[in-house]
Length: 319
Image 1 (cartoon, rainbow, N blue to C red):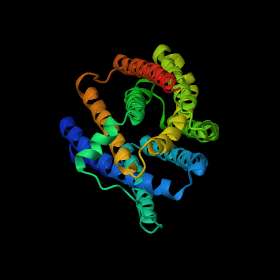
Image 2: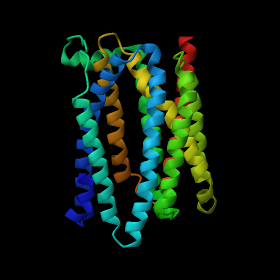
Image 3: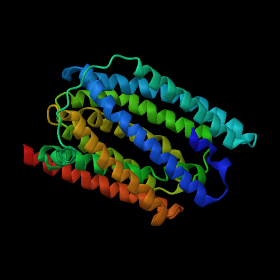
Image 4: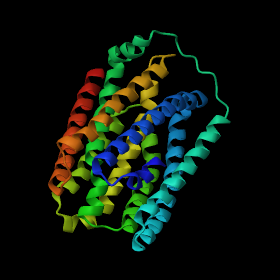
């Protein structure tokens, strides 16, 4: 909700940037703390054989709600923009998000929480044990590379669409609906692929899908690209759904027994470092322009190609 007030606090770009980073940091920290505890809670409640089914159902329900919300907000934002009150439209959007988050937190407070047994270990061992675990290292590299590749590829994507392709909020909302429909409908497919925990059947196709999506964004001119955006968003949704299966199941199940909290915490710490690195790059090296945005697409392609090769090699070594 705080993000909505930034434009009204100051007109100075540096102050706005500092405020944005402060609010984003608070959001990231609180979000990760909630995620870590929620993963253990969720996994304790669900039997191992039911986890893929749960993840599939969760993705379908989540994306159905999001696509309805996207459609409504696209219409509302276009109305506010046409009347010259675009910022108030975003304030209304953030207010709805705040209400949803409040309801979510309230439900979790009053929902049954099973007791989670966590080994008592020294603080430094919370870092050293997951970091030295060779089996878990592949998970860390995979998650870190994916976070960087997807993050760098989508860092300027919204700006690219709205500022350089000059699409309207309605078209932008339709694209997000396509993204969520693709994510929801492909969840069943990736859930079946994940049942045997052969993650090469998830990560390798995911890498190829993202490579194709960002290659389209990189190679086609803006005049043609505007018509190819629905295909791009179908691919992004399909790829995102595959990684969600890995994120929801593989990270937890590759952790040592009774040390899941430490392992999940360390994995989120690695992803957090990567996430913090991205805005630094955007503020120092990759200053926004049409050409620079194309460079970020290229970096995403290269990183996903590296992830594909790395995961394939590691899978062969294990086999």
